[in-house]
Length: 409
Image (cartoon, rainbow, N blue to C red; front, side, top):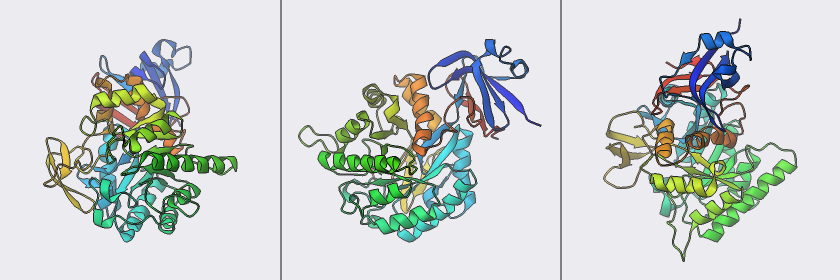
Protein backbone atom coordinates (compact mmCIF):
# COMPACT_ATOMS: atom_id res chain seq x y z
CA UNK A 1 0.00 0.00 0.00
CA UNK A 2 1.34 3.42 -0.95
CA UNK A 3 2.33 6.02 1.64
CA UNK A 4 1.28 9.67 1.21
CA UNK A 5 2.97 12.48 3.13
CA UNK A 6 2.97 16.25 2.70
CA UNK A 7 4.98 19.32 3.66
CA UNK A 8 3.69 22.87 3.90
CA UNK A 9 5.40 26.24 4.06
CA UNK A 10 6.88 28.77 1.67
CA UNK A 11 7.42 26.36 -1.22
CA UNK A 12 10.31 27.27 -3.55
CA UNK A 13 9.69 26.08 -7.10
CA UNK A 14 11.88 26.75 -10.16
CA UNK A 15 9.82 29.84 -10.99
CA UNK A 16 8.31 31.26 -7.81
CA UNK A 17 7.75 31.01 -4.06
CA UNK A 18 4.29 29.78 -3.10
CA UNK A 19 3.80 31.54 0.24
CA UNK A 20 1.27 29.04 1.59
CA UNK A 21 2.33 26.03 -0.43
CA UNK A 22 1.97 22.28 -0.17
CA UNK A 23 4.17 19.48 -1.51
CA UNK A 24 2.55 16.04 -1.58
CA UNK A 25 4.65 12.87 -1.79
CA UNK A 26 3.51 9.36 -2.57
CA UNK A 27 6.21 6.84 -1.71
CA UNK A 28 9.35 7.98 -3.56
CA UNK A 29 7.70 10.51 -5.91
CA UNK A 30 6.26 14.00 -5.76
CA UNK A 31 2.63 13.85 -6.86
CA UNK A 32 1.41 17.43 -6.38
CA UNK A 33 2.77 20.91 -5.70
CA UNK A 34 0.62 24.00 -5.31
CA UNK A 35 -1.13 26.45 -2.99
CA UNK A 36 -2.55 24.78 0.10
CA UNK A 37 -5.88 26.46 -0.68
CA UNK A 38 -6.21 24.32 -3.81
CA UNK A 39 -5.27 20.99 -2.21
CA UNK A 40 -8.83 19.90 -1.46
CA UNK A 41 -10.00 20.56 -5.01
CA UNK A 42 -6.95 18.57 -6.23
CA UNK A 43 -8.13 15.70 -3.98
CA UNK A 44 -5.28 16.05 -1.51
CA UNK A 45 -7.37 17.27 1.41
CA UNK A 46 -6.28 14.34 3.59
CA UNK A 47 -2.63 15.06 2.84
CA UNK A 48 -3.16 18.73 3.76
CA UNK A 49 -4.76 17.78 7.06
CA UNK A 50 -1.78 15.60 7.99
CA UNK A 51 0.95 17.83 6.54
CA UNK A 52 4.14 18.68 8.40
CA UNK A 53 4.51 22.46 8.56
CA UNK A 54 7.64 24.54 8.33
CA UNK A 55 7.93 27.09 11.17
CA UNK A 56 6.63 30.59 10.59
CA UNK A 57 8.51 32.08 7.65
CA UNK A 58 10.12 28.72 6.91
CA UNK A 59 10.68 27.20 3.49
CA UNK A 60 10.14 23.94 1.64
CA UNK A 61 12.97 23.48 -0.87
CA UNK A 62 13.86 20.80 -3.39
CA UNK A 63 16.67 18.45 -2.44
CA UNK A 64 19.89 20.18 -3.48
CA UNK A 65 22.31 18.86 -6.11
CA UNK A 66 26.05 19.38 -5.57
CA UNK A 67 28.20 18.51 -8.59
CA UNK A 68 31.56 19.34 -6.96
CA UNK A 69 32.20 17.96 -3.47
CA UNK A 70 35.31 16.29 -2.06
CA UNK A 71 34.30 15.52 1.49
CA UNK A 72 32.63 16.23 4.80
CA UNK A 73 32.05 14.80 8.23
CA UNK A 74 35.78 14.19 8.68
CA UNK A 75 36.19 12.01 5.58
CA UNK A 76 36.89 12.69 1.92
CA UNK A 77 36.32 10.91 -1.37
CA UNK A 78 39.95 11.29 -2.55
CA UNK A 79 41.10 9.44 0.58
CA UNK A 80 38.29 6.92 0.97
CA UNK A 81 39.41 3.30 0.74
CA UNK A 82 36.05 1.75 1.71
CA UNK A 83 32.35 2.48 1.35
CA UNK A 84 31.93 3.43 5.02
CA UNK A 85 34.31 6.36 4.63
CA UNK A 86 32.61 7.51 1.44
CA UNK A 87 29.16 7.15 3.01
CA UNK A 88 30.25 9.36 5.90
CA UNK A 89 30.60 12.17 3.36
CA UNK A 90 27.27 11.34 1.74
CA UNK A 91 25.49 11.30 5.10
CA UNK A 92 27.01 14.59 6.24
CA UNK A 93 25.77 16.47 3.20
CA UNK A 94 22.47 14.62 2.90
CA UNK A 95 21.53 15.57 6.47
CA UNK A 96 22.04 19.19 5.45
CA UNK A 97 19.83 19.04 2.38
CA UNK A 98 22.05 17.79 -0.45
CA UNK A 99 20.12 14.78 -1.67
CA UNK A 100 22.15 14.31 -4.88
CA UNK A 101 25.92 14.40 -4.51
CA UNK A 102 28.73 14.06 -7.05
CA UNK A 103 31.94 12.69 -5.54
CA UNK A 104 34.98 14.73 -6.54
CA UNK A 105 38.48 13.28 -6.51
CA UNK A 106 41.73 15.22 -6.85
CA UNK A 107 44.96 14.78 -8.78
CA UNK A 108 46.53 11.44 -7.87
CA UNK A 109 48.47 8.58 -9.42
CA UNK A 110 46.73 6.43 -12.04
CA UNK A 111 46.60 3.53 -9.58
CA UNK A 112 44.84 5.62 -6.93
CA UNK A 113 42.41 7.08 -9.46
CA UNK A 114 41.51 3.60 -10.67
CA UNK A 115 40.81 2.46 -7.10
CA UNK A 116 38.72 5.51 -6.23
CA UNK A 117 36.65 5.43 -9.40
CA UNK A 118 35.87 1.74 -8.97
CA UNK A 119 34.84 2.28 -5.33
CA UNK A 120 32.69 5.33 -6.04
CA UNK A 121 31.04 3.75 -9.09
CA UNK A 122 29.64 1.08 -6.79
CA UNK A 123 27.95 3.75 -4.66
CA UNK A 124 26.58 5.41 -7.79
CA UNK A 125 25.14 2.11 -8.96
CA UNK A 126 23.20 1.64 -5.73
CA UNK A 127 21.93 5.23 -5.78
CA UNK A 128 23.94 6.73 -2.93
CA UNK A 129 25.97 9.00 -5.24
CA UNK A 130 24.84 10.86 -8.35
CA UNK A 131 28.15 10.73 -10.21
CA UNK A 132 31.93 11.11 -10.13
CA UNK A 133 34.03 14.17 -10.91
CA UNK A 134 37.78 13.93 -11.49
CA UNK A 135 39.50 17.22 -10.69
CA UNK A 136 42.73 16.37 -12.45
CA UNK A 137 45.28 14.98 -13.06
CA UNK A 138 45.46 16.80 -16.41
CA UNK A 139 45.66 20.32 -15.00
CA UNK A 140 48.11 23.22 -15.02
CA UNK A 141 51.12 22.99 -12.69
CA UNK A 142 51.06 26.80 -12.52
CA UNK A 143 47.41 26.85 -11.33
CA UNK A 144 47.22 23.60 -9.38
CA UNK A 145 45.89 25.26 -6.21
CA UNK A 146 45.61 22.70 -3.41
CA UNK A 147 46.52 19.78 -5.66
CA UNK A 148 49.78 17.86 -5.50
CA UNK A 149 51.98 19.14 -8.35
CA UNK A 150 54.03 15.93 -8.24
CA UNK A 151 50.98 13.94 -9.34
CA UNK A 152 49.99 16.16 -12.26
CA UNK A 153 50.24 14.14 -15.46
CA UNK A 154 50.35 14.75 -19.19
CA UNK A 155 46.86 14.44 -20.68
CA UNK A 156 46.31 10.78 -21.56
CA UNK A 157 43.26 9.72 -23.57
CA UNK A 158 43.97 6.03 -22.95
CA UNK A 159 43.91 6.49 -19.18
CA UNK A 160 40.78 8.59 -19.55
CA UNK A 161 39.02 5.81 -21.42
CA UNK A 162 40.11 3.32 -18.77
CA UNK A 163 38.66 5.50 -15.99
CA UNK A 164 35.46 5.94 -17.98
CA UNK A 165 35.16 2.16 -18.24
CA UNK A 166 35.80 1.67 -14.52
CA UNK A 167 33.23 4.37 -13.82
CA UNK A 168 30.52 2.34 -15.49
CA UNK A 169 28.83 5.38 -17.01
CA UNK A 170 28.90 7.40 -13.77
CA UNK A 171 31.90 9.59 -14.58
CA UNK A 172 30.20 12.96 -14.95
CA UNK A 173 32.96 15.52 -15.45
CA UNK A 174 36.74 15.84 -15.58
CA UNK A 175 38.62 19.07 -14.92
CA UNK A 176 41.14 19.88 -17.66
CA UNK A 177 43.56 22.70 -18.38
CA UNK A 178 42.78 23.42 -22.07
CA UNK A 179 46.31 24.64 -22.85
CA UNK A 180 47.96 21.29 -22.18
CA UNK A 181 49.01 19.15 -25.18
CA UNK A 182 46.81 16.10 -25.51
CA UNK A 183 43.59 17.76 -24.32
CA UNK A 184 42.23 18.68 -27.75
CA UNK A 185 42.01 16.92 -31.10
CA UNK A 186 40.59 13.61 -32.28
CA UNK A 187 42.98 11.67 -30.05
CA UNK A 188 42.64 14.03 -27.08
CA UNK A 189 41.05 13.78 -23.67
CA UNK A 190 38.09 16.00 -24.60
CA UNK A 191 37.10 13.63 -27.38
CA UNK A 192 37.53 10.59 -25.11
CA UNK A 193 35.36 12.11 -22.40
CA UNK A 194 32.54 13.02 -24.75
CA UNK A 195 32.64 9.63 -26.46
CA UNK A 196 32.47 8.03 -23.02
CA UNK A 197 29.44 10.02 -21.88
CA UNK A 198 31.20 12.55 -19.64
CA UNK A 199 31.72 16.31 -19.88
CA UNK A 200 34.96 18.29 -19.99
CA UNK A 201 35.19 20.89 -17.24
CA UNK A 202 37.79 23.54 -17.91
CA UNK A 203 39.68 24.82 -14.89
CA UNK A 204 42.93 24.86 -12.92
CA UNK A 205 44.26 26.59 -16.00
CA UNK A 206 46.75 29.22 -17.05
CA UNK A 207 45.39 29.30 -20.60
CA UNK A 208 45.21 32.34 -22.80
CA UNK A 209 41.75 33.54 -23.78
CA UNK A 210 41.96 32.27 -27.36
CA UNK A 211 43.05 28.80 -26.24
CA UNK A 212 40.17 28.61 -23.78
CA UNK A 213 37.66 29.73 -26.37
CA UNK A 214 38.93 27.19 -28.90
CA UNK A 215 38.72 24.33 -26.38
CA UNK A 216 35.16 25.19 -25.38
CA UNK A 217 34.10 25.53 -29.00
CA UNK A 218 35.66 22.19 -29.93
CA UNK A 219 33.94 20.45 -27.02
CA UNK A 220 30.59 22.06 -27.85
CA UNK A 221 30.88 20.99 -31.49
CA UNK A 222 31.73 17.42 -30.48
CA UNK A 223 28.74 17.31 -28.14
CA UNK A 224 26.46 18.65 -30.86
CA UNK A 225 27.77 16.12 -33.39
CA UNK A 226 27.20 13.28 -30.96
CA UNK A 227 23.67 14.48 -30.27
CA UNK A 228 22.95 14.84 -34.00
CA UNK A 229 24.09 11.25 -34.48
CA UNK A 230 21.53 10.11 -31.93
CA UNK A 231 24.10 9.21 -29.28
CA UNK A 232 23.31 10.15 -25.68
CA UNK A 233 25.00 13.11 -24.00
CA UNK A 234 24.61 14.40 -20.45
CA UNK A 235 24.38 18.00 -21.53
CA UNK A 236 25.07 20.08 -24.60
CA UNK A 237 27.26 22.36 -22.48
CA UNK A 238 30.65 21.89 -20.85
CA UNK A 239 31.33 23.29 -17.40
CA UNK A 240 33.96 25.57 -15.88
CA UNK A 241 35.48 24.27 -12.66
CA UNK A 242 34.99 26.89 -9.93
CA UNK A 243 35.23 30.01 -12.09
CA UNK A 244 37.94 32.46 -10.93
CA UNK A 245 39.51 30.01 -8.45
CA UNK A 246 42.52 28.13 -9.79
CA UNK A 247 42.70 30.33 -12.90
CA UNK A 248 44.94 33.08 -14.22
CA UNK A 249 43.46 36.37 -12.97
CA UNK A 250 41.86 38.76 -15.44
CA UNK A 251 44.07 41.50 -16.88
CA UNK A 252 42.86 43.92 -19.50
CA UNK A 253 45.83 43.22 -21.83
CA UNK A 254 46.10 39.52 -20.98
CA UNK A 255 42.54 38.43 -20.19
CA UNK A 256 43.19 34.72 -19.67
CA UNK A 257 40.48 32.08 -19.31
CA UNK A 258 37.87 33.84 -17.17
CA UNK A 259 36.33 36.23 -19.75
CA UNK A 260 36.40 33.46 -22.38
CA UNK A 261 34.47 31.11 -20.08
CA UNK A 262 31.98 33.83 -19.17
CA UNK A 263 31.47 34.62 -22.86
CA UNK A 264 31.03 30.91 -23.62
CA UNK A 265 28.37 30.72 -20.93
CA UNK A 266 26.61 33.74 -22.42
CA UNK A 267 26.63 31.93 -25.79
CA UNK A 268 25.05 28.84 -24.22
CA UNK A 269 28.14 26.66 -24.48
CA UNK A 270 29.25 26.52 -20.86
CA UNK A 271 27.91 26.44 -17.31
CA UNK A 272 30.17 28.12 -14.76
CA UNK A 273 30.60 26.73 -11.26
CA UNK A 274 30.68 29.28 -8.44
CA UNK A 275 31.78 28.43 -4.91
CA UNK A 276 29.47 30.98 -3.32
CA UNK A 277 30.53 30.29 0.27
CA UNK A 278 31.79 33.80 1.03
CA UNK A 279 35.38 32.51 1.24
CA UNK A 280 36.31 31.52 -2.29
CA UNK A 281 34.42 34.44 -3.84
CA UNK A 282 33.04 37.72 -2.60
CA UNK A 283 29.23 37.59 -2.52
CA UNK A 284 29.19 40.77 -4.61
CA UNK A 285 31.06 38.96 -7.38
CA UNK A 286 28.66 36.02 -7.23
CA UNK A 287 25.72 38.43 -7.55
CA UNK A 288 27.39 40.18 -10.51
CA UNK A 289 27.90 36.86 -12.32
CA UNK A 290 24.22 36.00 -11.80
CA UNK A 291 23.27 39.47 -13.06
CA UNK A 292 25.52 39.08 -16.11
CA UNK A 293 24.81 35.48 -17.11
CA UNK A 294 21.48 34.65 -15.53
CA UNK A 295 20.81 31.59 -13.42
CA UNK A 296 20.64 29.21 -16.40
CA UNK A 297 24.39 29.55 -16.92
CA UNK A 298 25.51 29.23 -13.28
CA UNK A 299 25.73 26.27 -10.93
CA UNK A 300 26.46 26.72 -7.23
CA UNK A 301 28.86 24.18 -5.70
CA UNK A 302 30.64 23.64 -2.39
CA UNK A 303 34.06 22.20 -3.34
CA UNK A 304 33.73 20.90 0.23
CA UNK A 305 36.53 18.89 1.84
CA UNK A 306 36.63 16.68 4.93
CA UNK A 307 36.11 19.55 7.40
CA UNK A 308 32.57 20.35 6.22
CA UNK A 309 30.39 20.01 9.30
CA UNK A 310 33.47 19.63 11.53
CA UNK A 311 35.50 21.83 13.85
CA UNK A 312 38.74 23.62 13.03
CA UNK A 313 41.84 21.45 12.99
CA UNK A 314 44.11 19.38 10.76
CA UNK A 315 42.83 17.37 7.79
CA UNK A 316 44.06 15.99 4.48
CA UNK A 317 42.94 16.51 0.89
CA UNK A 318 44.34 13.73 -1.21
CA UNK A 319 48.01 13.57 -0.34
CA UNK A 320 48.30 17.11 1.04
CA UNK A 321 47.91 18.29 4.66
CA UNK A 322 45.28 20.97 5.33
CA UNK A 323 44.67 23.21 8.32
CA UNK A 324 41.22 24.66 8.99
CA UNK A 325 41.07 27.86 11.06
CA UNK A 326 37.97 29.99 11.43
CA UNK A 327 36.20 27.66 9.02
CA UNK A 328 38.70 28.37 6.21
CA UNK A 329 40.72 25.45 4.85
CA UNK A 330 44.25 26.15 3.61
CA UNK A 331 47.24 24.03 2.76
CA UNK A 332 49.19 23.68 5.99
CA UNK A 333 51.54 26.63 6.44
CA UNK A 334 50.24 28.38 3.31
CA UNK A 335 47.48 30.77 2.29
CA UNK A 336 46.28 28.58 -0.59
CA UNK A 337 42.60 27.70 -0.05
CA UNK A 338 42.16 23.92 0.04
CA UNK A 339 38.47 23.39 -0.59
CA UNK A 340 35.35 24.54 1.21
CA UNK A 341 33.85 23.75 4.59
CA UNK A 342 30.25 24.71 3.83
CA UNK A 343 27.24 22.61 2.90
CA UNK A 344 25.34 23.55 -0.25
CA UNK A 345 22.46 25.02 1.78
CA UNK A 346 25.03 27.39 3.33
CA UNK A 347 26.19 28.40 -0.15
CA UNK A 348 22.57 29.11 -1.12
CA UNK A 349 22.09 31.20 2.03
CA UNK A 350 25.28 33.22 1.44
CA UNK A 351 24.34 33.80 -2.20
CA UNK A 352 20.83 34.87 -1.22
CA UNK A 353 22.11 37.25 1.45
CA UNK A 354 24.53 38.63 -1.15
CA UNK A 355 21.65 39.89 -3.27
CA UNK A 356 20.61 37.00 -5.53
CA UNK A 357 16.90 36.17 -5.49
CA UNK A 358 16.19 33.06 -3.41
CA UNK A 359 14.39 31.34 -6.30
CA UNK A 360 17.48 31.83 -8.47
CA UNK A 361 19.97 30.73 -5.81
CA UNK A 362 17.99 27.55 -5.13
CA UNK A 363 17.62 26.94 -8.88
CA UNK A 364 21.39 27.16 -9.35
CA UNK A 365 21.87 24.63 -6.54
CA UNK A 366 19.24 22.15 -7.70
CA UNK A 367 17.82 22.33 -11.24
CA UNK A 368 21.17 23.32 -12.71
CA UNK A 369 23.09 20.44 -11.15
CA UNK A 370 20.43 18.01 -12.35
CA UNK A 371 20.85 19.34 -15.89
CA UNK A 372 24.62 18.81 -15.77
CA UNK A 373 24.00 15.24 -14.63
CA UNK A 374 21.42 14.78 -17.36
CA UNK A 375 18.88 13.62 -14.76
CA UNK A 376 15.39 15.09 -15.09
CA UNK A 377 14.06 13.06 -12.14
CA UNK A 378 15.69 15.29 -9.50
CA UNK A 379 16.31 18.96 -8.77
CA UNK A 380 12.88 20.55 -8.46
CA UNK A 381 9.60 20.44 -6.55
CA UNK A 382 7.49 19.27 -9.47
CA UNK A 383 5.05 16.38 -9.83
CA UNK A 384 6.74 13.25 -11.12
CA UNK A 385 10.17 14.02 -9.75
CA UNK A 386 11.88 12.09 -6.98
CA UNK A 387 10.62 12.87 -3.50
CA UNK A 388 13.59 14.93 -2.31
CA UNK A 389 12.52 17.73 0.03
CA UNK A 390 14.24 20.05 2.49
CA UNK A 391 12.24 21.85 5.18
CA UNK A 392 14.03 24.87 6.66
CA UNK A 393 13.45 27.73 9.04
CA UNK A 394 13.25 31.32 7.84
CA UNK A 395 17.06 31.53 7.70
CA UNK A 396 17.40 28.38 5.55
CA UNK A 397 18.58 26.23 8.45
CA UNK A 398 17.55 22.67 7.53
CA UNK A 399 15.06 21.10 9.94
CA UNK A 400 14.03 17.98 8.02
CA UNK A 401 15.35 16.32 4.89
CA UNK A 402 13.51 13.74 2.79
CA UNK A 403 15.47 11.61 0.30
CA UNK A 404 13.55 9.39 -2.11
CA UNK A 405 10.51 9.67 0.17
CA UNK A 406 12.38 8.65 3.31
CA UNK A 407 13.13 11.03 6.18
CA UNK A 408 16.90 11.36 6.67
CA UNK A 409 17.92 10.77 10.28
